[in-house]
Amino acid sequence: MNNREEVWDTLNEEPWDIIVIGGGITGAGILRKAASQGLRCLLLEKKDFAWGTSSRSGKLVHGGLRYLKQGQLKTTWHSVHEREKLLSECDGLVEPLGILMPFYEENKFDPILLKAGLTLYDMMAHRKNHRSYDSHNISKMAPGIRQSGLSTGLQYYDAKTDDARLVLRVLKDGQLLGGTAINYCSVEQLCRDQKGRVRGVTVKDMMSNNTKEVFGNIVVNATGVWVDQLRAQVGEAPKMRPLRGSHLIIPNWRLPLAQAIGFSHPADGRYIYVFPWEGVTLVGTTDIDHEDSLNLEPSISIEEGNYLFEALNEMFPSFQLKAEDVLSTFAGVRPVVHTGKKDPSKESRDHCIWEEQGLLTVTGGKLTTFDLLAREVLDKIKPQITHVNKQQNKVLDERQEMTSHSILHSHLGESMTRRLYGRYGNGWDSFIEEIEENGCEFIPSTNILWSELRWAARHESISHLDDLLLRRVRIGMLLPSGGREIINRLKEEILPVLNWDEERWNNEVTRYNNIWENNYSPNLLQR
Ligand SMILES: Cc1cc2nc3c(=O)[nH]c(=O)nc-3n(C[C@H](O)[C@H](O)[C@H](O)COP(=O)(O)OP(=O)(O)OC[C@H]3O[C@@H](n4cnc5c(N)ncnc54)[C@H](O)[C@@H]3O)c2cc1C
Image 1 (spheres, rainbow, N blue to C red):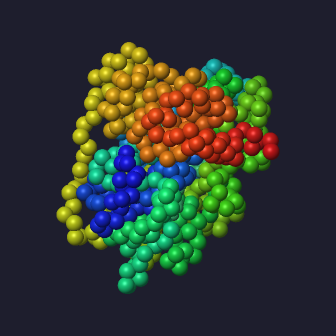
Image 2: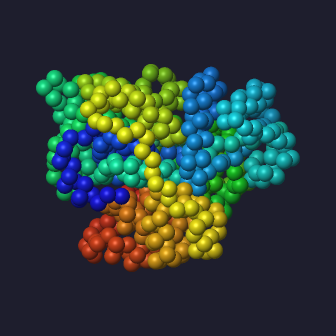
Image 3: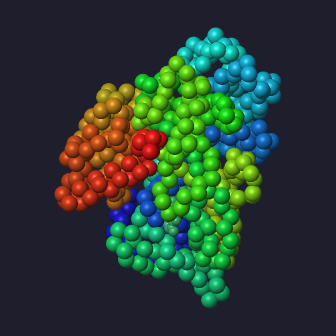
């Protein structure tokens, strides 16, 4: 990634074709698409890349089976298509996930209708990938689930990912294609031309508190659930309904699963998913109005925790799971447009694009469909970018073959090598240099290498310790107490790379511990 200070110094040398505000998956997708079309594009992120909803999603890359149930064929078709594309382009980062849906005698559902739905879902992906099982086989496939009343089950496929790494990978591609991205740069004010149209922004470097005016032909507001804050500056009324969803992370030895289990919550019938992710088990999610200030980092409430435990203990009674079993928690806020529905879960998850006095706002949608959004945004703004000689569809140079690295294969085996290849994308060649220099040692109890931390510290725009431990790698969610046990070794590994002195290190550790305690800790379930 580019060096922050160098990028800051050159930010206003000449006007940009596009300024994208927001460094989540939506902004990253637009940066990559614009850069691939030869446009000069700048992305500004107020906090860290993927700090917002894009590191706090359910981590499913899915076709949206529930849209199909609601008759939204086009939305499902688009999502399935995007899922398939991501599976093939990001092998190792986006991986197939089998989802088993057990059914019980008391469940009211029409098996024929459900099978027809899954057949259509599969047809959209041009394959047959679902099966029904009798109760005997379901019990063997998921031994921990409730046995009494089990009647039948269906298995289908979607995919899972590491959402923050997906953002990083797309951003990296965007930068290699000529785009520019900088984190910890907040857009404070929109700048207008004489006709009142938005033509630039006042941006504040959150590390130094310096400000600058930066101009561009098009300004895109891709700030997710925060879009109304910038829209207010052009006099527009708020449109968003922030909806919080929270998750639990449980060690896999307490809730071991070979694939995802999807089922209806006993209280309200909402869909609950539980699946193996990064060596732990992830449980989600809730869907409630988020009434806290959007300026605060979201966290799970006691009620949300109780709701998830009610579902878990109904589906996995023999495990007797309780709050003490939880490793970590996290909460995200969905950018959903308010249409006045009483039930939050009935609000549409479709994306929207609004043009208001030169400010192009793009919000809603899903992690899965970011590239679709980017294509729509680029199609919309193309007519306004006539002055540049657009170079259509730049492509990245081929990276080295995954198989050309016998060191990785012999030390790590194929699936770990594939995992790394998927994660580091077009940074692969320099990642390999890090491994060749520093080896393949794992951080205990994880599938993460110390080399990943060092490489991120060196190349991935780390300004704070939480950038490294919560988003570049997910140590803060995967290890007890956010990884406190490895903190001394971590210091030895990364301090020389980051050039932090003792005082800075101590401040960063304090900051990280506060963030973790207030937003990721299992103690939030028992406050
Ligand atoms: C609980 C939950 C579960 C979900 N599960 C899934 C799932 O399984 N699969 C799926 O496909 N989708 C899922 N989603 C939806 C998906 O996560 C979101 O649609 C997506 O992450 C939104 O990305 P974004 O880039 O639009 O917003 P964000 O990721 O929130 O990015 C917006 C960024 O803008 C920045 N910003 C704000 N104001 C400014 C400013 N003034 N200047 C500069 N930057 C600014 C913020 O810091 C933030 O980083 C889920 C969402 C939630 C909440």
